[in-house]
Image (cartoon, rainbow, N blue to C red; front, side):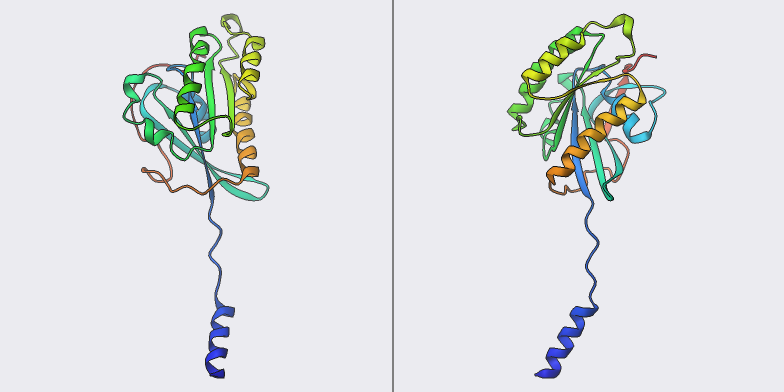
Length: 215
């Protein structure tokens, strides 16, 4: 009996624990077609703006590994087609296991701002209410001569829906926006997600031509 006990104890001492799993944050990026969602996600994950942009059909998926407080965390950014006819078949997958929502409008396109309540309502219909961290992004702020949506109007809207608002017009803004969300999520310790189809990078979408960021 004693020999058996010693052998069992030895096996425990010699065992090694598996490395901790990388936490994954799924962030969905929502807004009308052409507001610049793909440019924002591409810039954050690839480190540069795309030379050519095309309209998303289905779901566009990108990811990036970041380090926050000495912990490696995988940020997954999902953006979907702004045009409803391309979205219906993908909606259920898109809204599953979401940790945060980024709403995007084009400051040079007032119609994209007026569409925001509809996007917020769609999130609610898929159980993504105010308990899920949300952020509002006014894109193309560098086009000062073409702005149609003022910062005061955007701030009032963001306050009414209990979310912060950020402007984006260059690379530094994009980095700050998504890292702000990542820091907030890290403190909330969300669950680890399974890896979606497509491996550790790239996109899972069909594409067709359309610009998203003016230069």
